[in-house]
Length: 326
Image (cartoon, rainbow, N blue to C red; front, top):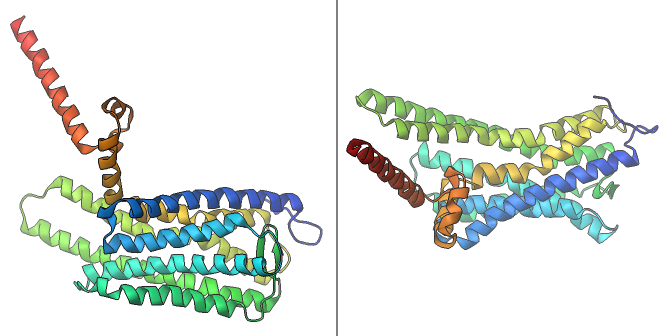
């Protein structure tokens, strides 16, 4: 892979067009995924529990962040500032909401506390307040200008340092916190599972598979932020070391993975068993019976699967009786 550079060390107009297209496509996927979770929360009353309410706020932040990335920067002046700051604000809010989810899980599972719902107001103050503070700090000594389709900071060393301190520093702080928290939660649950296995002669294999699936899923949560922002962090560090010398492939990975964060979050946090169950129940109510056979088995309503299995068993019994009579 080679860097595609202009004679001045920047990206060519063609390079910027490619990066713009990647940003728009990836941000659109994130917007659709996040909007789907927001829509599910609004439509399905059974999802309006505290744990999923935090996922709703995460999806809402991702949706707005993706929206402003798609919109781009149509003009200078106020709209330029609005696009730059709103994107920064909602992207910071997104990864801060992941820390509240990790905190809630840790407080419930490890510390055995049941007061997490009482902390909702503190969560809002922490997420929106911190996002606002770092967004305001970012404005100090920072002039906004056009970078392709975005309104972004200029290339001065001070502006880069402020951007790094107000975005990437809290981002990696959130990644470290989430990783440490989920490690403690997973370790405790695995220890509890070993104790249960040692005290019981027989263990339900189905429950074990379900528990292992949940534990593996939690282990992936910190990797979402790492995968979304690792290339962006490397790109920022490279820009510090060699200002004005932009690497095309690194910029592509930076923009593409960061814009997909909302999609990754919506799949990992949002599209869980509760959401699938709610969708299955609506499908069972509104979809005609003949359409079920065309759906994959994991998307069919459970009652229909049971009915289908019973019909298969009856047909097998009829065939056996026929063979016996012959």
